[in-house]
Length: 490
Image 1 (cartoon, rainbow, N blue to C red):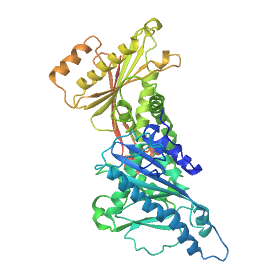
Image 2: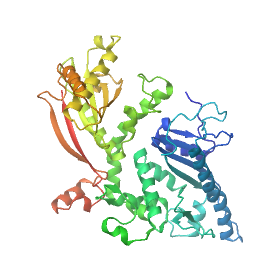
Image 3: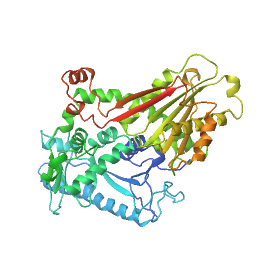
Image 4: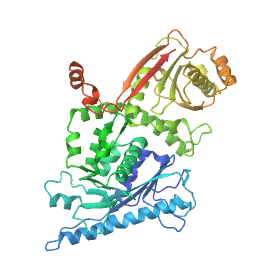
């Protein structure tokens, strides 16, 4: 178990809690240290070759009678924003230099997650606390008291109170007390958070200026602005309008209006199912941290089944969770020895999941090598999936005792099968092993084509769309969907 820090101040601990929820404990480390005994940042999260550097600063912007508000703002901004921007750029230079990073103040434990410093995409995030109340007092039009941000060519001149200018060529993300929880709650998977920050950097570099009244408003614009041509959310114009605009301004209240819609509320309600996927991941990650995880996979340091599961965005986790829970519910009630295999696609191209459920009498489950036999059976099922769907390059296997009959105790097995190269010998090997089991080849096998979308219209809205022949695209940014081809059988 690592002697990792947990955050020093209350706001740092809040940041660490949010990030552990989003990035999980295996990939986020509060208060890492440089080789000169100074802290590198307040929290460092790494997943693959994407690095997130967080800085958390709290300093109340006072209201002093007779004191020029501009003077008070300039002082607060220098201490909380400008100084941290310089520190953030310095932290990036340190990371790219290849100098060591440690997770403890004594510098005994090196940062455990490898990444390529030359290929790394580094996002620098500053969370600035202390200006919210002063901002709300200054303007009745400010819905939340958020800081206004503009990415452009910085002049170095003082800005108006509650407005921050950032060099668009060297972007730093600035959040505040209000919108930090919103952003990390709405983008609570690594994939979703990374996609948003990547798009911000792209937009800042593309346009002469990108300006918005609060980070939550930019987030609302981003989520509602789906480009069907590129199949991703974008900031700014889409399609033919891209080359006609040199700047983007997002008005006040974009987020406020969005969260009031039935579309948003229904989607959040539907998303509750998706946290089944998160719990499955978190339980395995905690076992890894506690040193109780079996097998030889180091899920923090390299590719693994869980590593692949973490890549799934929120809407895809909803679809995967719903289909897995449905498969659990449909597990046959008859037979002492029963198996059921389900295949589900990943959001990642040419990647799929195999869920294997087994019902085995107690006298067999207590045999010493039962777990090993179950893992072998899961491997055969994964090989059979590759044979059934030849375009797959990775298969993630999840093996469990059928929850219907496990008495509340469920132990999971995970397999990551790489099959980018699949020789005829390998194919013949798994065909022979599968001959006895006939995974994905039994008469009971059923196939389904479903679709999961990022936003889910409430039933009455969906019916209205069907009646008027309006596509889901015309109602909401649902087109960021994924077709589900599900195979299910005994």
